[in-house]
Length: 127
Image 1 (cartoon, rainbow, N blue to C red):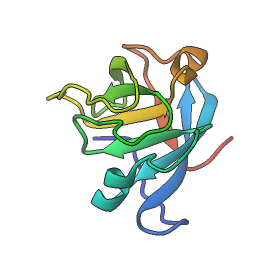
Image 2 (spheres, rainbow, N blue to C red):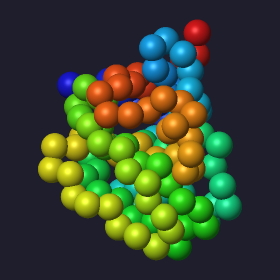
Image 3 (cartoon, one colour):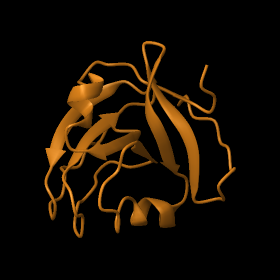
Image 4 (tube, rainbow, N blue to C red):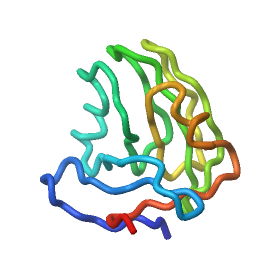
């Protein structure tokens, strides 16, 4: 079962969480809870300091984006299965076994040490 607890502090479309690896908070995390939020994603932003999680997603696109993306495909245990770079105006491949997709501005994953095999935690609270 995915490690995602629902919290609607910011309305039903986006919820705020933290992205954690090995007990260390990597970034603030927006979770796109609805189809509308998943469709909108990071469109219209000039940059992004945190990360965005798209549950129930197996592929993404960067059409209309103003910056490149780091994209990680996660299984239902939040283990990174694959990481790709996605320049603006491109489509990722379809990943059948993906439970969710994690996006961040290009370069963030290298700084955070996100690569295949890494176990991530998504939490509402920062310790």
